[in-house]
Length: 358
Image (cartoon, rainbow, N blue to C red):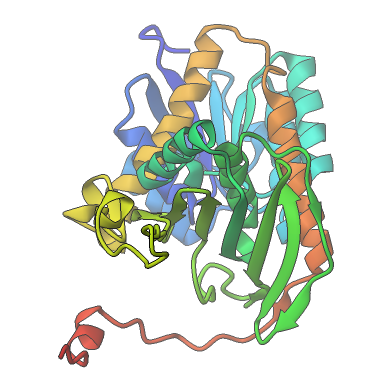
């Protein structure tokens, strides 16, 4: 560490790793000390623009590196991210690793962390987005008030690891879990199961373009939790979070439906939080929201480092989430490889202008 107690940090990977770089540039207590990559022209040029060195192997790293952000694919995605994380831990470098990785990869990294007394965390990223945190907090209040009867979930396959993490947070933990046999309907696989003992219906877009896995998802995760008193929905991982009270019209003494009063005077759907006034564009999320979420994960890591916390503290929960996700993907089977064509995203005005209201 530097005299200022700042954690000297390298970022491994320059694709999604750019979000980690932006997080570090605005985060007190950290100093960006370099990039670790294969040494491409893009990576070396990017490092030069940042004013930091570009290393091409763990052996090249100086001895004063405290933290590494491993933002390269692991074995489940055909990459060497988990091997790289273990090498860094064996060099006594603390590691924050981007998801996903298989349970055996995570277990191996945890063993290395325990042997060297270094912190190791897997960052599923999306649970730290502000609207997801709002959804999880509202779900906790709903559980306390009435309990969750059922969850209806949709997700692309490549975001199932963070999705399971979000569900575990919203439902009070992953255990017990189970998944039934999937049924295919077009590009979507549907299956039932339980997470935290709560019945769950899942619809998964189980296709990937192997040349562009980030860009072929037909939709992003959407979660609806059903309780006796209504439904809580997060429409997208960026929000908004919606509450729809249950429609119930009581009957009068003559058994006629009463059409006003009581819960019938509640709005049919309400938006929780500031998304009711402003729904940011993806560009804004990429510039501010995503780096801030990564910064929160890094801040948690720094707190554990400075406290010399037991590196095994809390890992059983994270390992359980990883196992739950992995069993779900095994039940689904390998994603269907497809060759995608660039889509034509629509703005809301292109739809609103066509709606005629009587």
